[in-house]
Image (cartoon, rainbow, N blue to C red; front, side, top):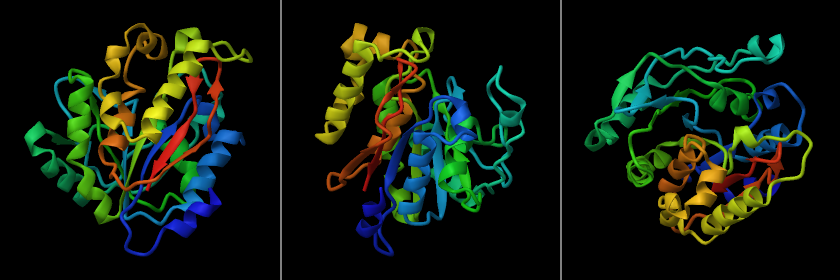
Length: 266
């Protein structure tokens, strides 16, 4: 990731980023994945704000944007060590930018909210990327009533934010099948196949094809029994530019059925 810093100049549009966040324990453990996130944060220019589209803020019938000035740290998981629940990520919110985001999504009937905060799809990654918690962060929800293509179309409305210094982060996983998890086991063939298919489409800038991934039938259902971890990728790709170069990092399948692959478009 170190060479990435040489590609950025003052005044450049911010990149768009997708992170495979995986196991919440990556927040407090020194792993290859957490080191990859830290290296990415060190290589990127300092954002004016971060918009995170996380798999863990799901709504139905509405797209919401968190506008609070002090978003709380949400521990939206169970069965983990106490140390993980004690973690706080006290980044400020970005109310002004959040309300501007609502305006950009007027055609999609987005609305403001102060009922969320920062879930672990956001803070578990950002605490490694920006450990000082000094960059304002806000989130956008995933309206599960929308088909894939509508999420991609909605994301395209957000592209202007990149020119305003906003780092758009989609946080999910390119493959995410929790019922199939096998700690210490080799990846399933279908997990490897789907991860490779997605990576090839991104590398070739065939982003629209991924907005139609539900056409893949059984393979899509194996990789994503539910789609909330796939949807954030469409937001990263929706704000991409044809001139963006693609960089992958943290490649690998964890727990046999969770892809940790991340991608940066800049």
